[in-house]
Length: 298
Figure 1 (tube, rainbow, N blue to C red):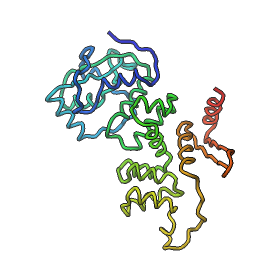
Figure 2 (figure 1 turned 60 degrees about the vertical axis):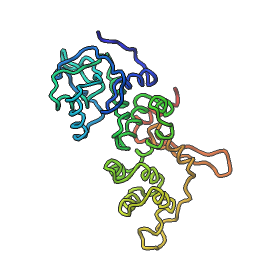
Figure 3 (figure 1 turned 60 degrees about the horizontal axis):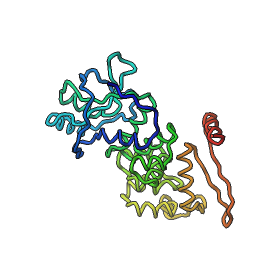
Figure 4 (figure 1 turned 45 degrees about the vertical axis):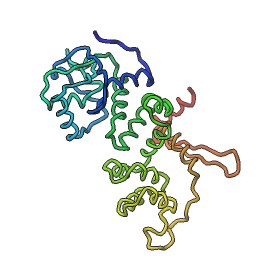
């Protein structure tokens, strides 16, 4: 029987659901979830809107070997397919589905649920975030999606995902780096620690290249950013522009939090020695302006 669930936000219910579908091979599970039934593998199809597009081939081979030996321990979560008659769409467990095909299984254990498209996307994002092999940019994009698409706060994400609020805030700030720097993060040329240090730099891409070329540590990168790259690229001469006094770390962190929550650049200008200042929110499209007005008036 298909279990119907009411629409609900991120929280204890979803966290409990995701704990039923541990996707990492070797995860200790004392009592596997009992499936509703088994389905022919050809009756199961992946979610075309699955946010995760790449699957490590070596990890899939390892999982397939485990499935050949032990079978599929944890059932997939599926829903009746909105596109294929008598078919089922994967809500959680696409890696197991792919590995099971490699292991030449003919049937898979499943839990059948009724979720709408929004809930399916929400679960898919969270399942991906819970995986250990995401690069920092993928992880940050997952957090940003949950905040932008579903209105979840950093505090709510931290509670449901077992992360600290600062971890989520720091991760999302990485999305403010230039695309080329994010590419360095994706391919492992830079660590998340290096990238966080570069967020406040005037030219993060130039400094990122210097960090990679010189093999600098995170602490050395922080010192490099603090010096604003002075005398590094110009043979010891003075920089072309006067060094900015910059903002303190707390102000920059608050700007990052506000920017992540709004999905728009936010600048804080606090008057030194006073309790007053100004806040500037920049928008690129009229749709963003409409969204900002909606939030301020709600």
